[in-house]
Amino acid sequence: MPRPHRLAEPEIVAALLRVPRWARDGEKIRREFEFSDFVQAFGFMSSVALLAEARNHHPEWFNVYNRVSVVLRTHDADGITELDFALARRMNELAP
Amino acid sequence: MPRPHRLAEPEIVAALLRVPRWARDGEKIRREFEFSDFVQAFGFMSSVALLAEARNHHPEWFNVYNRVSVVLRTHDADGITELDFALARRMNELAP
Image 1: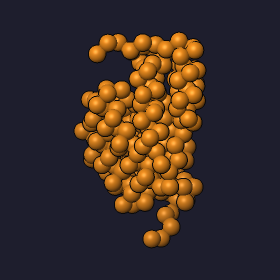
Image 2: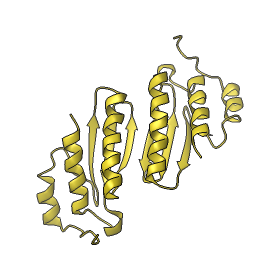
Image 3: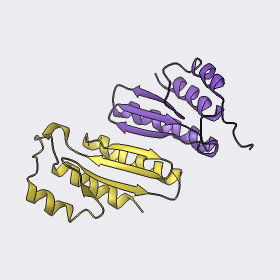
């Protein structure tokens, strides 16, 4: 796989418009997900874990009960890449 | 189930001796787990999730790739209880 391309400022701004509820946080993007309970929250994390492992692109995430806080960045590119937005889009599709 | 009993200082000190690698952090206990990769780390989290849900006692945890940082406290008791040490012991058993 080619090394991911670190997105330039206008690319990041444009890409954020296509992933509702995700916000810029320096060289990362982040979103808070809220579910009805732990079973729903961990079920979501399990789905994302399968995607993340298949892509070899993993989130930084924090969970307490029904809340999951996710941060995405591309370590290899030292910034935000299309890999992050692709995973963000899939996470939005998986969340209720 | 009876409301969990908030442990007193000497009880906490004694209980910590029986859960290696766990440390006191104010009114919480915490441990960092390190695995060989994401598959192992998330497999561990999945096992713990089943236990946590069965006990209705859930961790606060952060994961990035092969690392899992766990904080345990008992919200209902506003402190550390035997529920936290029981889960900590099971987590130690599940970690390699």
